[in-house]
Image 1: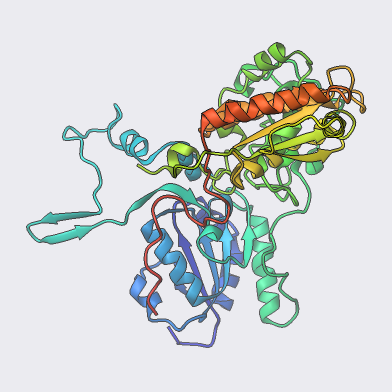
Image 2: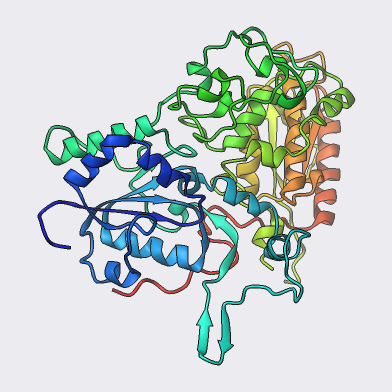
Length: 330
Length: 153
């Protein structure tokens, strides 16, 4: 591993889908810059390496670690602490690491419900109703599995994070720009942004980048995109389609609304937003076109799952973090 | 814990009506329960749901939001926005396992000191009956399963 003097690079996945890794590969020939400038020492999805190899490294010997995935098990937490110790720069890479993303929607249920859904639903062949155990004795000895937590957490709820790179997944052009920046820093041509910054994204909202026409918004009914044919030019929210643009950080070039699909908020809270869902609530509830509590309720029936809709990517990073069912354990 | 549960309620009041109503209740020496901590906003329309969530995450048992009567808003129609947000917020809180009765929206004009004091007193008893919320505070790093041992060197 010490074949040359190149700085070391690591990438890890925790509770995630693997899309972040694909996004890294999607930077095409820029990936050669990673190879030219870094010594890749640990990247489970791309190469064979063991935790003990990382444990044997000197503290802070990895220059850059990109961490994707949320923290959902004792293993994730263990590796997070390990990589924090061994890395100079730890980047929460992608929505799961930054704010929990889709895996954190499990924070609306308790652990029993999660296991039941995974192991006893109609599509699962599990006649003995077996559940994963943290420790099982078999003739050959004891085999163990890491404990699943009942609450999914963000990376920075476990360890200190140096930079945040939002997106589900981060856009490849943004990844390429960040890699360019790190390479320039290595060559002494640029400086790192202040610790704790959001990198590879804009400082405004998706609405700011959205090419659609905007007028005064008045919503009398929430529509679902599959049931209507939206006007191709007009703001989707004005057409009653719940678009998360007003609360979401820009950086994606407003790809979804440009293509006729509402923003679902994968770039996370816009600059200065404390609670993503609360900001979205503020934006969408205020344009409901009624002053009558009953009619307001009727219109709100058009959003059947407010928690899932408003916090699709941000449950773990929200102020409440998890439902009572989840944090009570079980 | 044999001590009587004293709920902590955060009250958001509008500068032009309910804050003055509370002020009037005080000037007239009307008593209302000390369980409520009033915070003055310029308008109920300023109430970002973030404030409510932060109150719960920070240990409050309930939140009372008060504004001008419909049609009386100093800023024309912002209290209607508060009303709409309140309805959506309550739906979200229910999904999170927080009883919707832990947020209350009341209209109180500047002249309604007695009504506001009475509403506060009744609400304190309602929340007392609900019991403590005890939401794990933001300072508690981790809920439920503890994160095990520190990584060995």
